[in-house]
Image 1 (cartoon, rainbow, N blue to C red):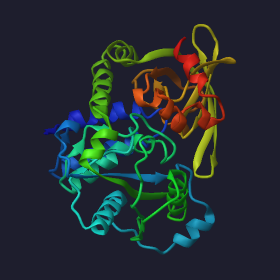
Image 2 (image 1 turned 90 degrees about the vertical axis):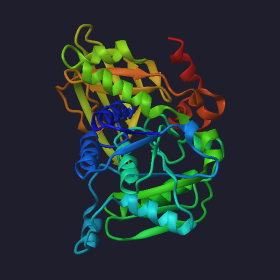
Image 3 (image 1 turned 135 degrees about the horizontal axis):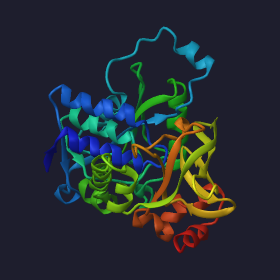
Image 4 (image 1 turned 30 degrees about the vertical axis):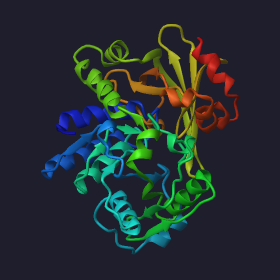
Length: 363
């Protein structure tokens, strides 16, 4: 267990957002959250999975919502409500802790991306260690897309909290999909944003289910980007990590729409040299990429779009025509490539066949 510096925390967040595959939350907002931690004299303490005691209580706080603005009807209903200062994910974590009647011993990020910063903020605010691991190893669109679900762990009880002082404890759900619907519904009526804390697990089971060392992996990617800024950060990421460069070029098309709490759309990149078109389709996160009509990569492989000059990840809604970008992929954590993992988060999720993943890995 060790305290990390602000620079290390920023490297982790940059890498986490690169592994966020176009989703997972805003890098800018995440960096501000992390910097605020150190500005107020706090720090982030990392604990390895091996250091977690069997009787610890570990929970996963994050936020749920959409980048789409709330509807006029919702805005009108929220008008006049006073916002409560603070992080709704902290509110949700404390509400779950009170409900369980047991102190939380460690915080775990639910995924990699800007959402990782919310877990960092909760850990610092509650003076708890942050686990060097998570149940996704990337950003994912649904609450069901966790290794907890692969192993059959219950998401309940979980807590939801708004910026207005509401909090709700959900005691039981039929499955993770229903939990996702409940959480998104709560977020939608709360301005498309709410805090959540779920999957309360004892340390023994937690260690069996979690993907270890994911923050360390993110930190190495972020470090490669930062140290490569003097010459070519994208090249540095590819050379120093397990990234694969697919193409570099300009965005020639970018469009998205709000779809029941998700954002779905397509980004088209034209290669600077070959003039080939690379089509990336996303549902919050990038789901697949095609070179023309040929499927090149598909979930659970991690597909990321980076700023060509800075190596910074670009959230899908922020992609604009004319941007110079690099499209890279990273290998998926091993658990997602198993039969059980692919059933939870494989091509089948987007109407394709899971064997499509195997065919792209062989390329």
